[in-house]
Length: 235
Length: 288
Image 1 (cartoon, one colour):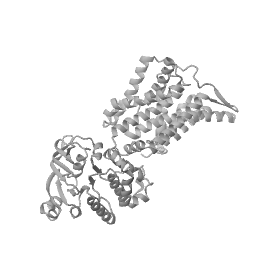
Image 2 (cartoon, each protein chain N blue to C red):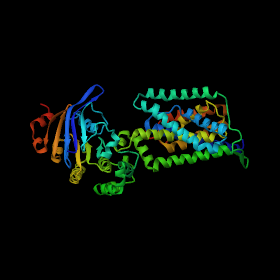
Image 3 (cartoon, each protein chain N blue to C red):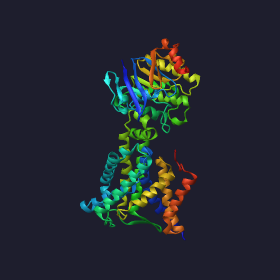
Image 4 (tube, one colour):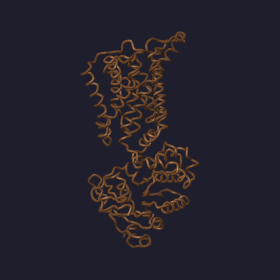
């Protein structure tokens, strides 16, 4: 097991937003974190990155307890997190954005290799390498954000709402890219609201509602599950 | 009024402007990085001038030679300012942040008055002395070198921020702290580096000005005010904007003093500030 999140509680000040959530991700597995708006999906990812602290429970990555390791040290362990709404550095060029993705020493050593690799996956980034990130379209920025995450040589790539605002064409490309990434042995944990889309890609899924885990299981078991439909459509 | 007098004023304004530019660049860097305004910037400038003065007066080191020490002292001062004060107020409300650095300015100035008295001092017979005459235009040597060194330091800073890896990381932290942190860039370390560089700039300016400027505990106040104007005029977070803004302020100050009335020098500069705030609040090169 690559990532093992056990029984975490998360509070914003006094307001509890995550209740006793446990999820895990195996090596080379694609896992979807599902749920309606405000169900706490992003908070779970942010907790795994330690952008948000958890009160109870534990997070283990690659057999190491990482609950108290600061955010900036987690990339080196192999966790890359692509935040919601891309969050590329708008006033830096595409290439500078990518260079910053390879910050820890191991990633720096592999810098030119990684750069070639992401340029191969996302050819558009190479042709636009000297362009400021803010001048790119939403889809291109999403590609850049994912490529930047790949530069850190992750074992686990966490992506928050990867398909938000993408055109169907770009979406199709991205689904293919995700599959290729997993085939290389990298795990993906992604947050998505579109249940059908997510479960058509992922191996497994977790469904959150109001900060609590409702159901989890293999994609094919979830896809027509009544409980899942209920969460998204109400009673 | 002859053209020589006007040229003289332009040269004087330009030289002063380059110094303002570097001081403002330090302020702008810190603000751009963590959105904290260093209201003690003028006091830090005063400390750098005193550092230069004491190194001369106690150890006989000419300001020209002591400048690396002054820069290092100020950079160190920046790091401890971050470590002992700023770090604790990063997430605080803006009013608290303002009070913290404003309080720091009063604290530093009062301590300085206590230790060194409010007397005016100056460095006697520095190596850089005298003036150059070009036609009927006089250029003071210490002023000339101070402005050149500040210009070089300015471009050094610009090069550092735009071309080096640490510089890029500083920019990344300034643009999106969490996104940078998630890539492995520790913001706290970046903030400390930002303070070190920001006050290092002040170290350069103060160290060079110690050659010809009176050194006293309130010396920094006007410089800090001008630096605020320069940052607003150049655009918050823009380093290159500081260069243009610094030069504009220097020129307005000296030409306004010459053409209208020298006793209202400050007025002209702050009139620009008001115009900027009203008509172009994002400044000349601002992003916000």
